[in-house]
Length: 406
Ligand code: ADP
Ligand code: ASP
Ligand code: MG
Image (cartoon, rainbow, N blue to C red; front, top):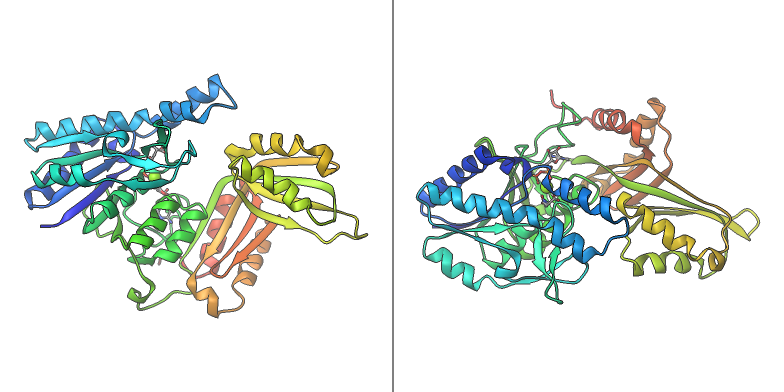
């Protein structure tokens, strides 16, 4: 007997028929004698719709109320999935964030999980009851409902797997594994049998939304056996593993993209100590993540331009935060652009091979794609380009690195 956590994403629970088919999958595991906890997302499109309502009423909303609204989608699917199981003669109950006590911090809208008390759930599961958990939601220190950021049900599942000391955490989704790049954009993308935690972490944080970044971080930290599998077929999926479990290491494991980027340029900023702190301190205080940053050396030692990127949804707040300090910062103009995409090439092989970035730059140049910002780390190279080039850039790079499937 094993204890398994299975998570089903939005498209996998998109309607009543799909929920019933998910229930049949769960029943198979129960019939095989396993203890099962199921984490469900909201039905496909529901969270977007809820976010739309909030935006329509309030642009600079109170994030606690945003959470009260957007967390509701998962409550519906948890209840419906429990009912579908009961209809099949499987004992099941739903669990909401506050009932399990998924305790988070108070960063509403993108909260992090601090702890989960799995005791009551383990008791219920050991009596043969399937635990159906509403993903994405928790409870903040103030006792308010919190949500874990878009795609957060993956993180609910992994955190739960760690808390329940589960043998496995299966992330069921609308693709049958992790591919070399988004298979919906590049038809020649190849499915990976295995990927390291580290590479998956980079892929996720650079935009491959098949797993939420935080879920991979947690899986790595708690050694959760994590796999991405289809909700609709029994094909083997992709296992996320430690580096020593991969025998044949590829130079490049994947290419990711993120449309969730917006660029801000401040022109004619004073070139003196304290300026960067003056810009980025207030952004951090407003919980706005800054991603890429470029600052040039000034020609005359006096003034220079600074360009940085933030998430698209944070753009409005970021601009307001910087503009509120215009007098202190003394820049000349603030220019923002949200029609950009970040494309990244990822691979642990980069540590020991030169020329990876050059292949990227030439492949993009050949297609006439201009690079606006570049950033690198030990195992990735990212570039910012115009959004309209997303598909062209992905296809060109996939081919240039020899990743295309035959
Ligand atoms: P769910 O609703 O099940 O959580 P998501 O839409 O969040 O599903 O994530 C699955 C999607 O991730 C796929 O449909 C695919 O378009 C996208 N994706 C992006 N990059 C990759 C990749 N490298 N491998 C697989 N899927 C990817
Ligand atoms: N329903 C939430 C979202 O759409 C959480 C998730 O699906 O993982 O972001
Ligand atoms: Mg998802």
